Image 1 (cartoon, rainbow, N blue to C red):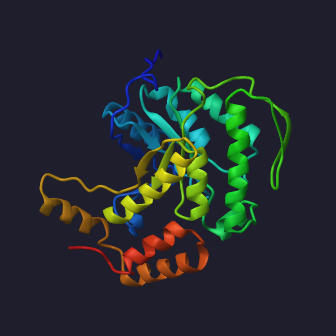
Image 2: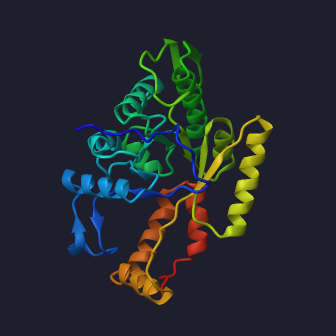
Length: 297
């Protein structure tokens, strides 16, 4: 099947919209197992082709033990899409920089220059330990900084020698380059000062949580100033869930239907779990905004 290329050389819009590929499964309602749908290949391909046909800029592929592998899933849907960018996770500490560079370059070539890379340092120590990573919050971000320093040098075509706190490499090279120059764009999120510093040094797009506009304004100003001090500029993105209907009344009715099976006890249990298990600054900011309430009108 011949596919046309609509890759990064085309002009960027001032605002891009991405969808979500539910590789951990899908559901019509939260906390409603009877509406669950497994992430079988045909369904994921259907979501990807529909998103491509509707003109979305790309899709986020989630990562973690509750999801199908993002890289293999991205490779499985790439041949069935024309323009859709594939936002796939780089995992510092779980993959060596050289191997991650080869994987990313291969996906970029396979897709005709449509790979996007979402650097995920992680914010749940228990989940990270289950994957074999035992560093604390600040150490993980120092490791991420080293990872991206090596990864970006490889991706630029350099021969790389480094001997760092966490990662070392001798004579590393990437023999098969990216379609995109100098490499697939790096997207990165994290609300802590350490994360913002890494974004300023390495990211092309800085991702934020869906916070109130005045808080987002402060975050953007801080990260933009950090990047400017290094002679860099970034784009910014926000992760939001949209409920779209013809009228506001219909939208709120749909939103209420999404959470109609969620109980206050379930909310309290999940909030307690996050408070105990997460060291993410962004997650704690979101919990403070939520306040444990069942939001509906």
